Image (cartoon, rainbow, N blue to C red; front, side, top):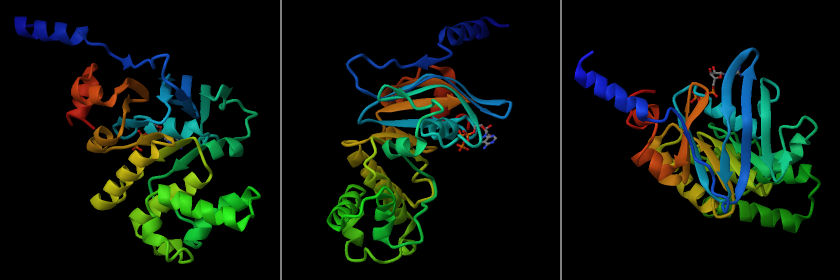
Amino acid sequence: MTENQNVSFHLYDEQPKRFIYEMRPEKEIAISTHDMQVYYGDKLALDDADLSFERFKITSLIGASGSGKSTFLRSLNRMNDDVATVKGQIMYRGLDINFKDIDVYEMRRHIGMVFQRPNPFAKSIRENITFALKQHGITDKAYLDEMVEHSLRQAALWDEVKDSLDASALSLSGGQAQRLVIARAIAMKPDILLLDEPASALDPISSAKIEDTLLELKKHYTIIIVTHNMQQAARISDYTAFFHMGRVLEYNETRKIFTRPKVQLTIDYVNGNFG
Ligand SMILES: Nc1ncnc2c1ncn2[C@@H]1O[C@H](COP(=O)(O)OP(=O)(O)OP(=O)(O)O)[C@@H](O)[C@H]1O
């Protein structure tokens, strides 16, 4: 080994292999995971996940394909129950929502999920919003109308659809449909919105609208979003977690992840050197 190689090896070795931001005590935490592990059969897909998410902030989950981002996100509202074993604790309002006796349907009213592909029901725009509310026994028409307008306004879709609420949701563009799905989640008045690549199937203009919508929504909701789009993560999120091969290698304030990452693999990833 030459002298130069020796020096660079030494510098690399001084970097942390992992850095997890610890929320300061004055921050309000919306949800946190402790010793979380997720297995698909015998395969450990996610290990050692201890993260706290600040209330009314946007946190991005980034990392290469297969690094465990969706596995983590889906575990937060028990979407993995049928396919995976999730160990550890998921603390929400003092309750471990990973505990087996939790009422999962009730929990999901508080922790909503929006998927990559817009998936509106084959019903009218209005019914997409009112469907779940009616399922929960809400029948008051004035309240339902109010929730339709309120949710569509919050999802920045009201102005585009207010004259066609009884049209089929399937007639909406992809970007409008995704905002409708966000409105549908909001109608349940959740605390936390989980979004799995909500803009990746959309054109740049629709994607920008979703970003604007999320920035508005964080006044009222805690948002955790999986994204492959580095610029998007840098633009909208307050915190970013970098996943690599089933572990969170770095978690920090977004500006630090994108300007002064501490872990070499994070530096490589945000610079586009792998993944
Ligand atoms: N239902 C499943 N059954 C078995 N293995 C799974 C299942 N879902 C995910 N995995 C595996 O778990 C690991 C993490 O996958 P995950 O989908 O969480 O990654 P990701 O970072 O979200 O990837 P992408 O960016 O491609 O969505 C991968 O090795 C994947 O093959």
